[in-house]
Length: 153
Length: 106
Image (cartoon, rainbow over all chains, first blue to last red; front, top):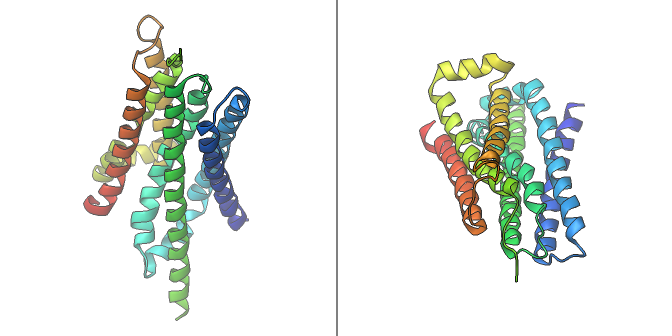
């Protein structure tokens, strides 16, 4: 079950990132026709991220201590001491950015060039930060793997 | 002619986002460097990270709401391009403080 929870949080994180990429392209071509879709997709990105955050938070509080011990006793302790520590705090900024997205996208992006630029900056920030924390997650998972492998040898 | 103004909540929550990105980073440094703060945050919810997250999200809502009530309820006035710059600066600064702290200082 733990593994399922872990994978579901990654799934929602990736869904948020893909939605933000979609939004970036849609906002570049914002007009009266795609305005409602942009607003719906910005809400979707926020919901995906909140789900990823809450599921990951539950896993972090309840289960992560086991992985943490494996990482810290393995050959890649930095997978926790640097990558997990930065990830768990960078993700809070990501959460704020996606929460802000539907507010910024509620303006008339078809008629307002400055509002379009604002949403483009926010979506670009979401994509970059999401990529960063996904990469951190991969290194943390690898930290567990090399820790377990080291135990076998 | 294009209307380049945005809603008061776009400005107020945008400023709150930038401010709380910095607060998030400062809170990281404060709790990692001061065990009393860390213990206090641990005590509030049972997990320091849960407390940390809750503080930042709650402050985001509070500051966003307060900034929207400024100027007799009209909200803070700022040019949208400047707002975008402030948000980017806040997020980048917050990110650099966090990554830099764990890379060098911790």
